[in-house]
Image (cartoon, rainbow, N blue to C red):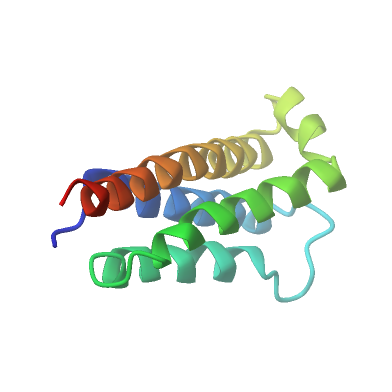
Length: 124
């Protein structure tokens, strides 16, 4: 079984979320721990989706769970709204935009990838 386009898109958007987090950390957004877990959660999930999803379909569920976990954490923490509203502070704005856009798109493409993978099995 080949990688589906939705699974590749899921991994791409997970990596976009990692890039957004790294930009936020590099631009000095306060509140990140010394070793933030977000880039590891999203990055490792993206690698797993790219390398194992064609063999183990259950890995595709990680491509939904990880971005939803990060998005819920961002919503509960709540400071990203201020960074999105302040376009003049370019680094935090771009990082937050990449992160939030990436995790939303990753969650959506993850749902599509799971539905495609399990639809193919049901049709056979």
